[in-house]
Image 1: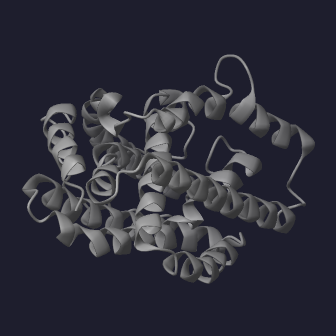
Image 2: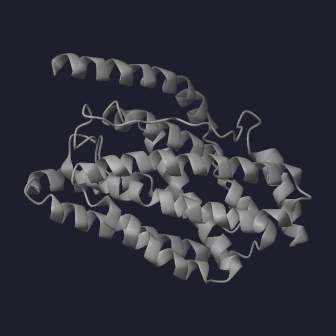
Length: 303
């Protein structure tokens, strides 16, 4: 094991991560039913397909990350904090995989080709499992930086949460919270078992290519299958939401500096202390769940 990296790790885990942040697996038990519309994000076909394609990558992708952490965590048994965090990470990711599978099955039942993305992942991942173990760890650490980016994007912009349908909203908030909570675990594990800068950047390149390809593939399949409901106006609005300039637009561009932090030689995920988002949204999550139940009751009455 890289001893110097382990010393850095001990400092990072204890000094950078706020004491208030705990990595504790908690199930959500999400459900989507007849009250959930086909287009549950901003009432937009384009944006719903984008996030559905992203969701489709989670069950297979998160299982891959769990397997990678399991492959390496015995190497850090001497670091009790990190070893414990690895267990918390595995538990949280297992819950994420199950909850997103519920949404993926729902979208598939509504005619969206989510299974095509899941099947593509099943075909691709065996290739990545044949890579050197250190490269798999680098890929996993980088992929977690992307999911932490998603968590920060969602929770830093309350209007984004408000535009998720109430039956899906708890999943968005809960998943985003936990991605921030465990955002440093795979990086710390990578740092303890490799820690080389070039390996880190190589992992980022792999994660960028993999997530970019799968999301684009899923979007193309979804847009084609739903082409009767696709409009130029909605697509333009969706692209403006991602890359535009101004209020309530350009969310992917605005958050882009968060991704680029990964290239800093002395980077650590908790250099950016966004733990206040965890505290704020943990208290909001119960309110959101209550609101979700009330929405279901109103929809049943209307029906």
